[in-house]
Each structure stands twice: as structure tokens, then as C-alpha cells.
Image 1: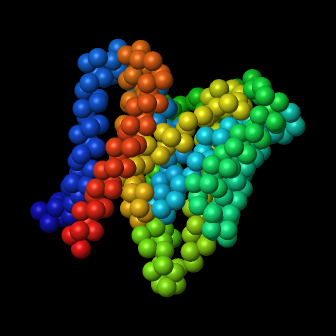
Image 2: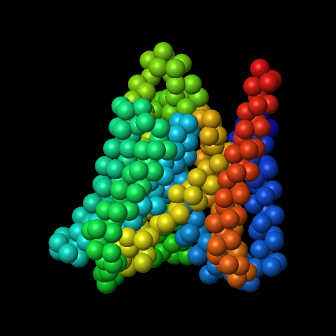
Image 3: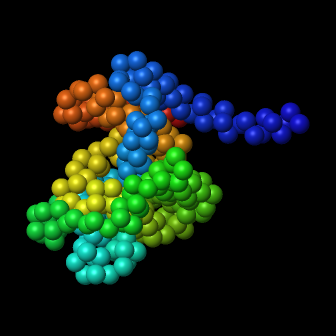
Length: 325
């Protein structure tokens, strides 16, 4: 019985061992904002916090995979805006069913993500350059399609997709939970997941091991694009409009959540458990500072500092590991 109990507790112990630093940071922030943040621990605020975390998490799942491959994806926020605009236009302007609009929003994410992956794979251009360029293309396309103005809708069924709840749990949080479970099984329980880590850890060795490098790269950026597309649909449902200006800076939050969660820019390292903590930390920072009425511009400053510190800590960790070898 003791052996069985130890086997069940081993993953939990391992999780705390790997993430004790950021777990302490998370607990400290919760304590700080519960003392100095007005109404931080109220049910209403916690629900709002989880909704915000869900939006960031959709993008962070894809961004984390790109970083595990020693790449990056900067397209998320702009692609979410394009997805939301196309989604609402599909059923408002073309008169098609809502579910078709939702599929169109996700599909444009898949297409853009696949295009990112193909360009990165077959041209050798660095992912930073490709996704930065695609960010500009998507943002411009969103403004052109919407003629610079939000595409509004009064459809309640569509609004419920982003604002509804199952009991006390908002739908976006349910979507987030489902995606995190799927992400965990993909990265930890499938051959494809092992290949993603292998390619990120050492692309040359992975190629000699018979792994289809091109397939893995295109798949990862396609998943990232699909998650951004879904994020755009949920945002449009929450706002009851497809807004070409939405999602600005969202990719920064996603990157910050991934690196805070222990995903290494050197590739080959990153866990879903760490990502969850990173998403919560970024969400709590934004939420807590808003409750304290801190100027929102300081949030950009703080998140930038967090990314620099997290990357520096990762660099020091890599140096220690290399010197130990």
C-alpha cells in the first residue's frame, strides 16, 4: 500500500521539485495582492482573472511549442484579431451559420500557422523574422477587411461562446482546461511530442535519428496558429465584435508565461505544468495591478523586465549545465 501511495505521490513531488521557485513567486504575489489589491480574492475577480488567463493560455500553448523548437511565434495577437474579424464577418455579412464563422476563424489560424511553418522550414529564415513579418501582414489584413472599424454582432448564441459558463466555470476556462490536457498528452505521451523535444534539443541528432524535421516544424507552427485562431474567436465572442485592434501585445504575455514556466529559449525544454504557473503569474500581475489602480503602462514595463530576468536565469542555468558536462 505504501509503495502504491509513493508511486502516486512521485509526480506531485517531482512537479514541486521542478517548479518550487516560481510556485513561491506565485504564492507571494497572491498574498501581496490579497493584502494590497482591493477585492482580489472575491469570486467575481477570480472569475475575471481566470478568463484573462484562458485567453493568454491559448496563445502560450502554441508559443511554448515554438520555443521548445528553439524558435518563436510573434504572430499570435495579430492573428487573433484577423481570426475574430473573419469569424464575425462570416455570419454577419455573409449570412452563414455561426458554427461556420467559428470554423473560419480557426481555419485562418491553421492556414497562417502552416504558412509560417513552411516558410521557416523551407527557406531557412529565422522564425523571429518570419513571424514578425506575418504579424504585420495579419494586422494589416484585419484592418483592411474590417475597413478600420469593429465588425459588430448582436447574436446572443455567439456571445455565449465567450461569455457563457457551465455552473460557476466560464466556458473559456473549460476550453483552456481541455487544451492543456491535450497539450500534456501530445508532449508527454506521444511519439510526436518526443520528436518535438528531440528537434528542439539537437536538430542535427534528431535528423540522423530519422525524425522528419520538416514535418515537426510545420506541425508546431500550425498548432500555434490554430490556437491563435481559436483565441480570436473567443475574444470576438466576449466583445460581441471582431476588432482589428484587439490582441496587441498578447504575444508578449504568451512568451512571458512560457519562459517564466521554465521553457528554455535554447530549445528542448518546457513543461505544461510550468506553463500553467507562468500563465497564472502573468494574469495575476495584470489583474492585481489593475485592482491597485497602477497605470497600465507600467504593466508593459514590468512584463519586459520579467522576460529579461527569466531569459537571463535560463542562460545561467545552461552555462552551469554545460560546465558540469
